[in-house]
Length: 218
Image (cartoon, rainbow, N blue to C red; front, side):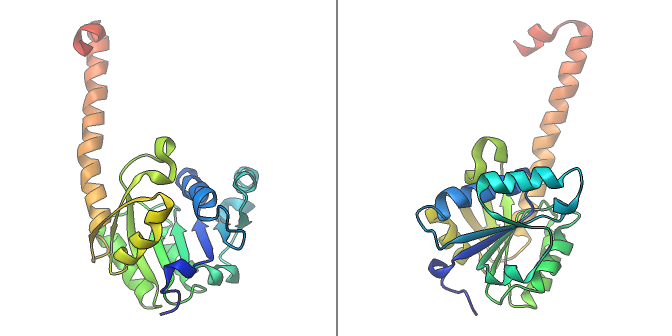
């Protein structure tokens, strides 16, 4: 496959320039592109043409110093690695749109929050085009950690992907060679974490109504 040598990747694309996409793109610009003027980063966000969101997206791209496109153009063909950071609802659409122009062997990091079966299904679609799909699950918030948030990877290309990312400060752990495993762990873990959060809120609401917040917290 093309692009097998990760050291020779000279262009990266990020799909989606929201909170997570901005954190990853900023990290790549500061670390991967640093001192390498020949390396390029292209961001794609279909919200660029939106009257409300477009200006903000364009400004983010300007501050980071990356090219920005509002559609999946042929420019994506130059990318040796792609980070898909859209929404769960748009994850499959974004992957298939990018697949039309990506070259075989391109690393495709799916960062979107999906179930294991959803991720596995998208992976199968990408494999048909020879794309090295990587289930790329973030296990923390981007606001405090940026691109250094812990990631868990799974899929046949996970080891290759980890080898590419580690030198640039990404905190990555390979779980398995089966796409869907990393996403499944994230979803199952979220049930517990968000359950604790919900119980905490209910506890404090009850304490407030009883006038005993300080006592309960103590």
